Every structure is written in structure tokens, then in C-alpha cells.
Length: 46
Image (cartoon, rainbow, N blue to C red):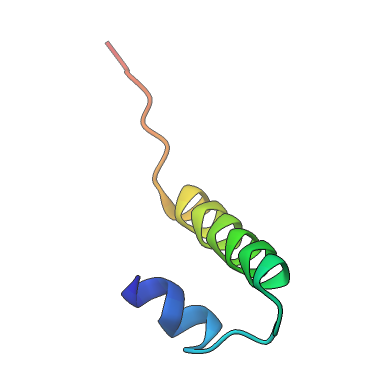
């Protein structure tokens, strides 16, 4: 939660509950994508 709030802000822009849920889902998807891109790719050599 700390990383999500640090990267995307502490408050939501949307006012309606449905729009807030969509906004949180988008923010979580962006955070997951950033973590996935930052994770090193491991390849077994032997």
C-alpha cells in the first residue's frame, strides 16, 4: 500500500464508488506492471 500511495498519490480523483474501484484497479495494474518490469530475468545456465 505504501508503494501504491507513494507512486500514485494519497487520494482518489473519482467521486463515485464505481469509478473509484476502477481507478484503484488501474493504479494496482500499473504498479504490478512496474514491479514485473523491474524484476530480474533468471536463466539457468547449467
